[in-house]
Length: 454
Image 1 (spheres, rainbow, N blue to C red):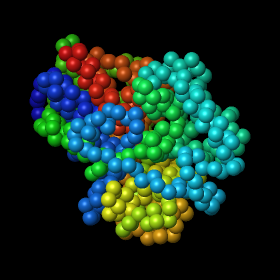
Image 2 (cartoon, rainbow, N blue to C red):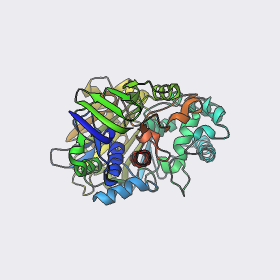
Image 3 (cartoon, rainbow, N blue to C red):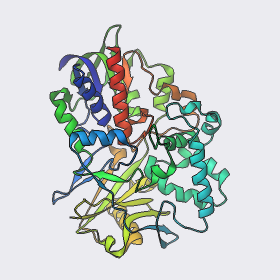
Image 4 (cartoon, rainbow, N blue to C red):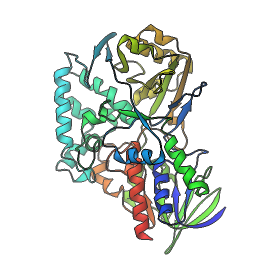
């Protein structure tokens, strides 16, 4: 394939497709090059034998995620509330405790957890979402891991273990893996231009990031974007090399080559830095991309004829402090035609359980479900998994993470235009980085940059 266009977009996840749509609607020629045989990136539907659709990738949306919600409405994809009626369950030390709200009322942990909760919100309020490296205490907060901060802030080590139930699904990593500044920046971004980000919105269901889901599954959004773009989207086309010249760039791979005036990169950082760049990327950009590995996350789901836990007054949402499952949700379809419990197995839990034999992992996940909602959970009619660490063109999920010293040292390069190359992808967003809303925002920004430069 030999082609000449105004803009070549690398990656057909939501961010790349949104960027391409903006360019096409402005009358510019664009071509999207996607390595996979499908569109959507980390957004992927899973169909059950009866035709019911659920999500194997990104699933949830909520208030202040205005850009993804507006896009879905435009594309005719409706939302429905995530099931949250009844009690949540907190499983610790072999005991199951029913509760409502965000934090379980564990009397041994609650005082510490309340202090941590308030301090995180307070500190996050001082982090600029578009420039976390400019926070008043950026150097101090980026010099310490979230783990070390927990140890210096809490009296009970079990408090950190509770927060792992939120953290491991959120970023697929452990407190040791990320800087305090990185986590505060994520919390600051859990809002919009008129609503400050908070831990509550990031971790909550009703009114939070897990408030709603899409009817028909979230992959409907990239599928409908790609349908509108038509033959502007090329699948099975991994980009291997980008060469920049004075007045154009050449993007090439086994598919051939595309000559473009501008290039938009909308793939995970580790994949972007693996491209052969000529000239090489600026040092700050290259180092930043290399220091942004993906988190480690699996999604494991059990399917039942009906959501039986609801009759017992349970929401299906649970936090567990031991075993492979740290958090679980009811991700049944809106009509209740099946009951589906979803487990997030992330961070070190993925390391410890991800490579074990499937039957052993399945039994452990079902046992965790049973601790939370009762023994009927051990007898599903179906079971499926999605391990994002084994996805060649994702390398992990749900988001790229940064360790100590990365944001303060190299963060300013995150969105900097590199010659003729613009940078999209959810990790480059200001608000809701790591979420579908962040992907839309980044795609919109990158297309606007490219249009202004053409």
